[in-house]
Image 1: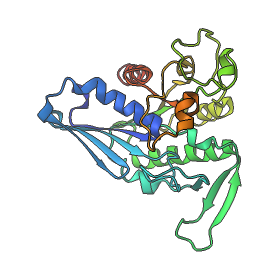
Image 2: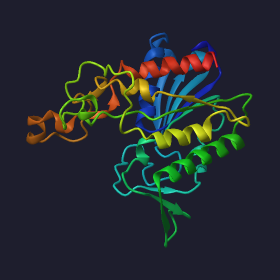
Image 3: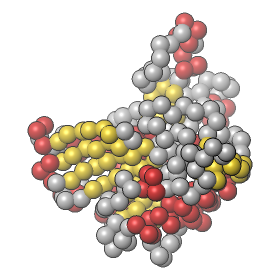
Length: 285
């Protein structure tokens, strides 16, 4: 992997699940790199890991919807009323130009349980025109915009483009036959049922991914299907061991289930497997 990255720029673009995959890859590689030959820097939405001896970078860019949105601040993005600007990818895309390998993802942020609010126009407009769209239609719009941008700004002979499918959560313990409300807390074994499909992963949106990205002749996008294999891993989340951004209350401490993170994944762990799949698709397409 290091040798193939010589003189190149690899990018991960998306939300915190893609950032986890990015961190996993760096953890897998950095022990082979001398201390004075590597550095990690963050510039707003962009994090850059530099491999000096290889004249290469592995980068992560925060864009949870890929399109411009009111959740684009890399650190302060807990917005209750999410708004996505229609077709507006260039604000982010200018940072992706020149990449030789790109891994995109977007999913979780579209799952609000409500219709998506789509801005037609600019966030600077005094009178904003906002329309509501079904999440399926809004998601399809985002993927179409991504593909259009890739075709316009990247060369299929020089750049490999990947898209990671949805990462499951494990908040519904009834999904694996336990009583409701237990979530992923204290889970120590994977789900054994090989037919298990994560209930929070929309098969409708999976179909949209297939329809928009599979077998594109004009610009091939390699789909990294990590969904079902991750769905088994109710035991692999950060749970109560994640970094807490604010002090826990007495009530929370008395009930660990209440603050268990069943979205993100421990490292080392599952996301290393995502990178093994990525490695296989990269070198043996």
